[in-house]
Image 1 (tube, rainbow, N blue to C red):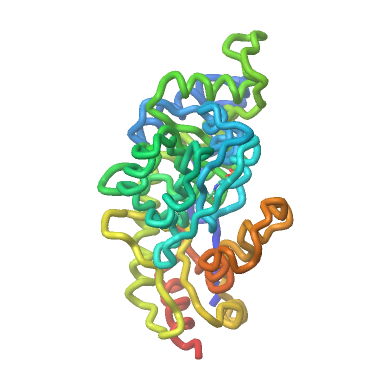
Image 2: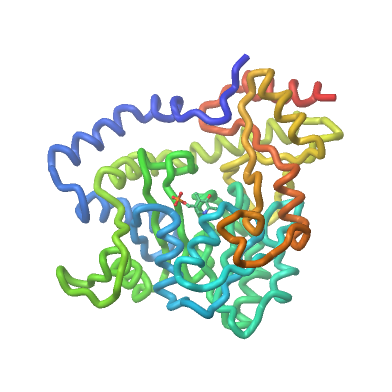
Length: 365
Ligand SMILES: *Cc1c(COP(=O)(O)O)cnc(C)c1O
């Protein structure tokens, strides 16, 4: 049997009529940037996240970077990020001129460990960026308490967790702002690049919008040296077509995750742990295994697609050599990079495929 790591086909098949209608509507109107589709999706996505404002951006990296810029984070500042995340979290900080400061995760949940944050706070610290990695909500209550005590901003990286909740509240609605990515593989994906910043702060939303539109608050009036990072009409229309199906598709991911959690019994394979306050959306189903590379090769040979998120921790990447962090300084991030394996997880994977993955893992010796 073949089980791809990810496939968009079942979802695209189910939404075929809606997606084609979205294309037709935009194409017939012949209006591609800053229009009705963008406005409608922003409103719908703000409602979905239970926040007041949503500003579409060109991608998730910009959604985070523009939020940090709007909060006036700049060179000389420090921003706390987890030591294990996709590089975009740290790059969003770097692009403002500020320095990312890595805090180790709780290895059971893969998310930033609130107990380790205060050690890394200095006079330069301006913000904390919790990343709801793999679709698992971070432990927000202690993180919010730390931020309040030290007067720090919170910018949530929600790129992998559209629709997840913590104590019943949607992630993205806890911080001063949050950034989402609609990269095609995300739980809510465009048919290209797209992103959004959400916030409850009206002034901040306006500033993010201006910063992503050449720093312009009014046509040809430029109040900031901004970027060009807008959500285009075509992608907004596709996203609006998909959004009403997101909760259902996330629920299906939860059902699949439960099959894995109940079915995988191999002493060598450590399953992900979910904190009781969280309802995750399983962007990625991440297991850990000491013999990860052997397990990966074995599964691939049996026709099962896998991935590693992420094979090289950020402090070991060439682009961050200037941070001067040595191998061994962030041992948990390094341990995760060396042992994490992502199993097939997507809307439309069949129960037979999931059972095959379970049986194959259980037979791994
Ligand atoms: C995908 C992702 C981003 C960046 O989103 P893009 O749309 O690819 O720019 C940021 N943070 C995390 C955790 C991501 O997974």
